Length: 280
Image (cartoon, rainbow, N blue to C red; front, side):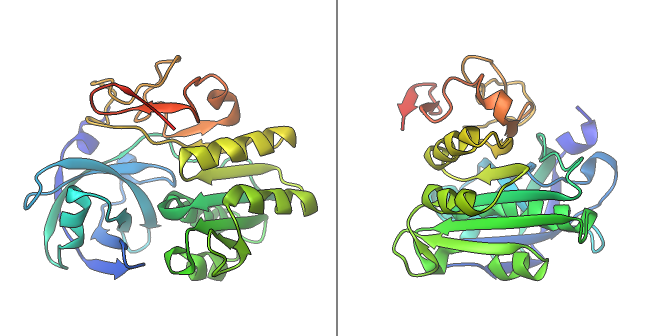
């Protein structure tokens, strides 16, 4: 592993965007050089120096190479993320990375792509949309299913639509677009359209259901998996999955459909910090 990306950088928060009542995006200056250039689907490790002193992985939600900035999108779900949400522009965080495999964007020119994101899983999906369209302008079609519990929690719709993606929303309560889950919306789109590739990120139960739908249609997919991480360098083994032993931080977090078939715990269980299995 390159020593550069293992070293912390102490970065000032340059901007904070309140996406929803519980989700914020934090923007940082970022030196776009060599292994430091992030790819859609990768993540960074974030360390807080005040409040809850801990380190957590965060998906990269925005990559601005021209202006040398990145964004991470954080949902307030615990003490660490609550501490981040209480920070202000000008405050500083320790960040190292980027880590993991990103989405494979090779050979997508002239392809019809289905991108599916659930909740804050839209962070890497929106990044994929940005990168795919920028690199293949007018030579790739992307239909995006953006799913959330309610209208106010849908993420990055204007940004993706302005970039040229076709947006299909769905909400559990029917307040925007299709009333139902991402799996239901996927069934609808598969009925009317054919796709060469799908990219998916969201709750694992959602991804499992979509995986099965795509397999029925022989549509290859790329899936962003999440597990409990400590080191992000493949040393601690905390994020290994059964029965391959693959480390989410190194061999993932993006896995192909063929890879997922070898991960027997996918859609069934994960492991908590203690290593005890938690079944979905």
